[in-house]
Length: 99
Image 1: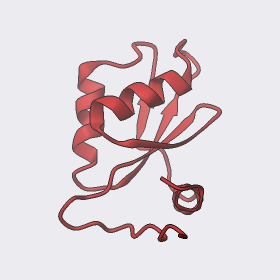
Image 2: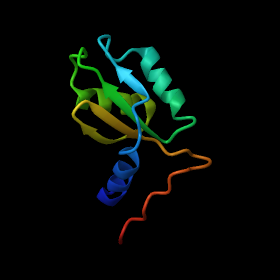
Image 3: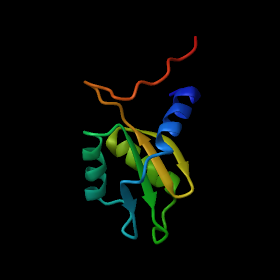
Image 4: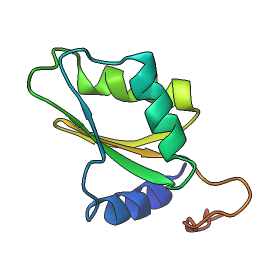
């Protein structure tokens, strides 16, 4: 992902509200499965890490991205933005790379 593409996704994510929250129990298999299922209808997800979660948001973002085969767009404070394009019918068209 290029910096231009990442910036475009960040701009789209700025208006999103978090649809998942990571709490005290941190990452559970059920949480990961729920995020994976959400990628069936959305390509861009925002996740909030609650104050009672003692894990590092960057580590959580990397782990969720690996388990769901998505990409980390950004981690700001306790907010995580993940992107996973729809293989058949992508809704978000990323800017082309400059060559």
